[in-house]
Length: 256
Image 1 (tube, one colour):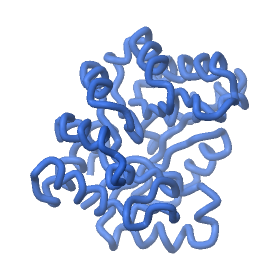
Image 2 (spheres, rainbow, N blue to C red):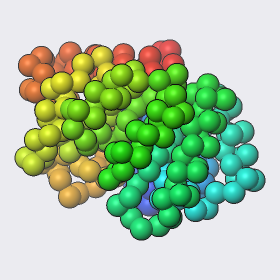
Image 3 (cartoon, rainbow, N blue to C red):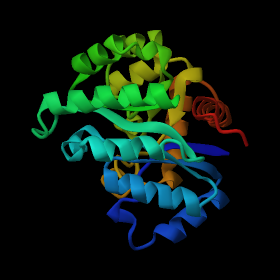
Image 4 (cartoon, rainbow, N blue to C red):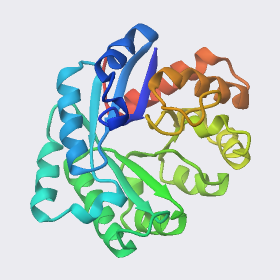
């Protein structure tokens, strides 16, 4: 069976066939899906999905690019949502300097607040870091992230940065980018990272693997990612599925 550790099935890209696609996942071997919040609205939609589909769990959090919408009232609502039975993580949270807004100081403030929230509600964190390696590491170190559990979503940095996160005992979400020809540094990082710290993810509907690069992504493409990891690690495909499944269950405390 396959564990999808990061998806966004609330996205408008799935409006035409969302239910049909989701109902098809278990029959294609995908038995567990984490739908990850990125905005206040997507957190609401994530809750609706996890209530409707028994194999979908939720992460509640606000993506750095959406932190401009947060205030004390909405932050209090997020915290309350973390107590829902099938909410298994706080995320995705972090820093994204690819876009100009909101300002870095706003992103940093709410990243720190959501890290503190995760500690208080005792949930692991799903970290988003894009073009912000230095600041992300500094904030996580200053907030003693080694005392939290979590995953670096869509890891795209070097093995040297991977070592920093391994020192904090964090896991790594590996997605479709690992299949790209120009992903040399990521392939080196995956070769370095222990299998016990790797999770499979798609970030659907984004970042579809080869041979579907540029098209809408879905959890049905997870086998392409697992096969690439197997080739890099020199192990068989079934081992990758079994190990990453167990890794995700352990991190998110899902007993099946």
